[in-house]
Each structure stands twice: as C-alpha cells, then as structure tokens.
Image (tube, rainbow, N blue to C red):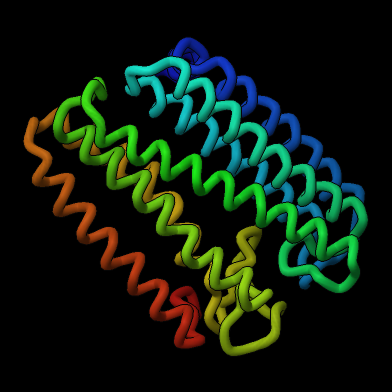
Length: 259
C-alpha cells in the first residue's frame, strides 16, 4: 500500500484521529523550528527535543488507533474513545510544549507549585487515557470484532502491551526520575537521549508501549501466511521476555545500549 493510499484509508476509517495526527505533525514542525532557534538546555539536551519526540509519538498513537478502532462494531463507542484520546493527548502535549517554551522540565518537575500542578495535570490525563485503553482492551474481547483470529490476537496482545507500558511510566513518576543508578543527565544516545551509562526506564517504557505497533504489524504479516493465532502468540511471548529483560536491566542500574 502506498503512503497516499494509507493516509486516505486512515481518513476514511477515523477522520477525528486522522486530523489529530496531522495536528501533531504541525507541532512537530514547530518543535523543529524551536530546536533550530532556541539554545535552551534542559537535562543536558535542547529544550525542544522532548516536544519533538512527543509530537511524533502522539501522531503514531493517533494513527494506530485510527486504524485499530475501525474493527469495533459500535460507532458511538469508537467516537467516544477517539475524542477522549484527543483530549488526553492534547493536554499532555500542551503541557510539554508550554514547559519547553518556559525553559523548564515538563516531567518530574515539582520545583514550584505551578510546575507541580502542570505535572499533576499531565498525570491525571494519562490516568484517564489508561482507562480509555482498558475500555478498548475489553471491547476487543467482545463479540462482533471484524478481524481474523491471527490479527485479532495480535491487536489484543498489542493493546495489552501498551497498557503494561504504563507500569514503567508509573515507576518513573513515583521516583520523579527516569534514571536508575545516577542523577539525570550524562551521556545519551543522539536525539533519544537514552543513557549509555546507567539504567534508563525510558528504554523499556518505549519498547513496551510500542509493542502495540509491533504486534499489529506482525499480526498482518502472520495472517497472510496462516489463519492460526499460534505464531502471533509465540511472538508475543518472545516480545514479553524481551521487554521484561529491558526492565530488569534498567532497574539494576545498567544500560543495554552502553558502548
């Protein structure tokens, strides 16, 4: 499928999330401009790198769900879920961009009453988004979902992984840091800024969350070869082991990308 055909299909399936994805692409362009003209440094990197990454991440999230929710049989539920995702992610990105503009951290920042309120609001809407995901997960176990056995299993596993990805997010929020074994900062991978020296919970968080896309793509690939959900289940088990290993490594204060 060509990119133009994919975008047209996304628009057809869920216009709300399709255009919300494009809105985040506009935010991505804004963050790139900010990166180019603003030299403010937060936690060792340019202040606009985090907004840039979140604009990309939310675009991927919106367009994944634009595709995924199409298979649910009840349009009113799909519209409600879509609207709630848009509200939750809009609040998240608004806070991240505002704090970048102010030149202060958005996450784990409780250094003032205002910053604490911003971080708390972000947490509240992420909690709401988690409830929306739980609702979506339940709906994919009810009758009427228009998918083959293999693809259905893949999306169920994918949404489960996305939910479980919130565990590392909760650990980071509770500790007010993503780093294990040292203070924040230090050497990190280009752009991603994942630590190459000590434990960094952003790494397992990223791979567990994006298990949603990994499982979805594997489900499409597998369904073209067999109707059985067994290969998808085996792949899911292997991916879970991989994500658990990344969590263990991070919590031990080690980096899987050290060199």
